[in-house]
Image 1: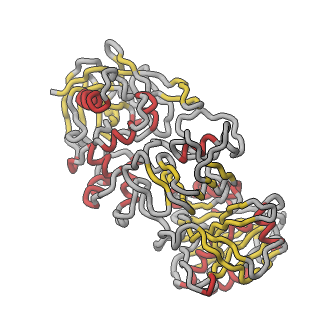
Image 2: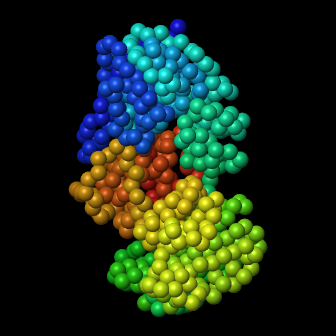
Image 3: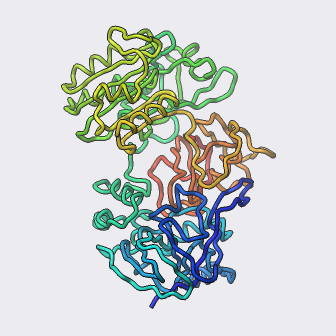
Length: 577
């Protein structure tokens, strides 16, 4: 019979880590006597990052003595004591390859249900001073698992563990973990997983997202979106035409040398330009593709920004016949297939990707319900008004509303003010829609909130920004934000790494171990969780160059992307970060 060997608790605390401070509850210590286990945790216990840990579905974490023995041998360590893996219950028995999602157990006075495997996280590596640990736990099929508390009650070390119910479909913890994090996914196992009521909602959603997709191309973060880049790095294209759309907005037509066909973009994708400026510097900038006038050409549409070096150059100095370096179309802000209503929402020059979507719907003669919601200051600022009207005329179920933000009263052909939740509700915008939103960051934030309040599923609200993405650094205590800069100390002599969104190019240094670490040294906003190539939170589009991995990720990202947490450059790189 399985037994609770040790009951471990610990409250969150701040710990130093790589020059940062991490707030974490990973540090647990054994306690004597009985403790009450409640719906959210064990008395005296707590979690530092409630977004990734804790809550009703992850109230108690369980790890096995047999896994302690395995890791002691594998890591050649004799200092692994109960609580070292952050678990509340150190148990004898209950192996990950036998315990199933939905199984229930009685321990002492309490009853528990198995809800999910451990969430991969760098903090277990921090606790054990073993940075590889998150990947090792998954790769060796020893993740441990979480309990939901069915019946509250007291437990103590020495209590017997009695199975009270067997979960449906017999999907073990180890198999469930591999189904999310490792290649070779099974459609049959995915269908079993989403049919287990006890599986926590986050894992349910991840598996639902994978169902019915090309599993060979999918990764832990879901089905592959977009297409393989049409070419590697940059290629020269010629400016074949420029058109002033408004006093501050110009379209630039880029044509392949010799008129050879170029890769057709998915509606919503973007191009990245590398431009040598008159001062001798090189700048990289991405622009949404607003059209493809012929098989050999792309159209981008650029707003002139007073402080934008590239936009001013494209407006003021680029002439027909000029050659620009262009990377292949990329991007995951693309129109998804379906029959649900579509909202195409934009502000200002944010219209550029969504007009490509509108054109795609018009060319397909889509019968979907389509809402075109465009905001701009005045009619004179409106971009593509005639083109939009032509596309809308070809769509039988389309409705268009234009908002003029500089007008306090209604104007002919438009609505005064901004597209608020109340306005959208009054217009009858359907809550079952998929929305595609592009514009300034504040507009995207406000519209996303409005659409959620209207009842749209957050997972069906898609947006595109070309500024740096919001950082995702779980547990790291916030500090003052500074603009990206050259790392402190002597500059490197290795490959040049360009972080395109951040406008920063730095040289790889001998002391660098990953692109993620180099980005952090220059305060480039980053996103991570495991830091060992498991979770793919750090995945970043690779515009130009090549990398190698050390350690190897458990699953490679799609072609044209890179896991910066475990990648090193083998040439100069341009990253969309």
